[in-house]
Length: 264
DNA sequence: ATCGGTACCTGCACGC
DNA sequence: TGCGTGCAGGTACCGA
Image 1 (cartoon, rainbow, N blue to C red):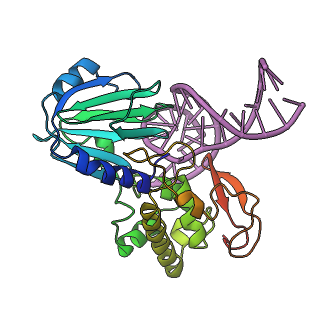
Image 2: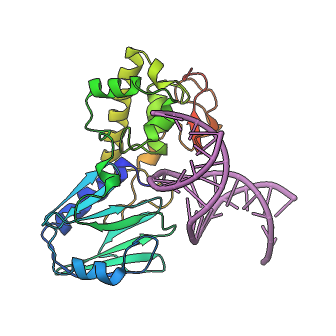
Image 3: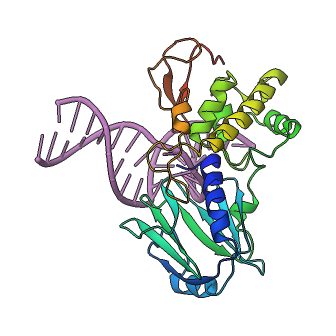
């Protein structure tokens, strides 16, 4: 579920709560979400103080000092709830000197990992979708041969974009999701770059998109879903030209676009 | 390098 | 009501 705007919103709601908190105890209830030894991991966490939190693409990274980090990826249905109440889908609970953080995840695609350094997956992420400069974006795009949509979803190419915001950004930039990345002209690259920034910024301002599961660290839903132009709007009129929005499958992902506004 | 397919999980909407 | 099917914001892995 969560893409960059959702993870950023979770970060912003949790940061003031978690910074400076000391871990008293930790409980893991899923061997899928926390792959390591639960007891050992809980032992290593005990007594640690959260020095800071940051977002890396769609990962939340908690700095525990001594080059130790706890990385959390929310997968599709992960929720981090400050002072949440444990329920049937609770996969982890962090108890602090003040307050408690509950991790719920219905589908268990999320991951919680404790590392001495950043896990390779995080270290190998491409530039952040909101931080990359236009020139670098253009250079990286032109070095790739594939279709633009799978490329934007590739976290090693660019980190943070997911299915919703990729569809929305391509629509805004009037680029077909199957356009070949390396053949995009300067004007279209510029439009795409701007579209990505604008969509992500607007989504963060709206607290993210709550299509089904997503809520922020305080349990509040976002409302950017009401501003989606194409995602989840198959058959409905394009806001710009009235043509019915089409849904196709690209890279095994539902893909929504306007066949008239977005030409190859 | 890239692509397509599969796998991992669970719940829900929908059609019959 | 019940059952089967397809779909869902995620990533990883395999072979081509």
